[in-house]
Image (cartoon, rainbow, N blue to C red; front, side):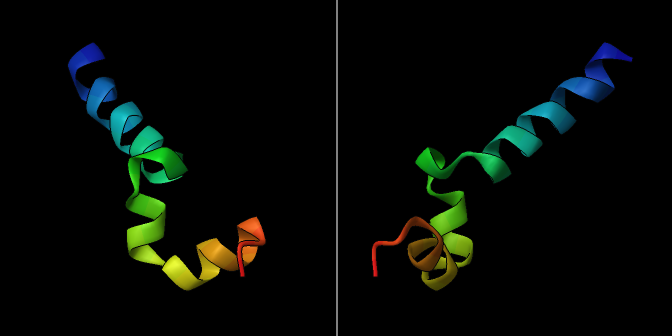
Length: 38
């Protein structure tokens, strides 16, 4: 069970963590708008 849960948690953290760059790479425009950069 632990081996199956670990990858899911890691993927979830990567998708929701802006610092990893995944969020910006996927939707840069929406990210900029959300954070008020533009």
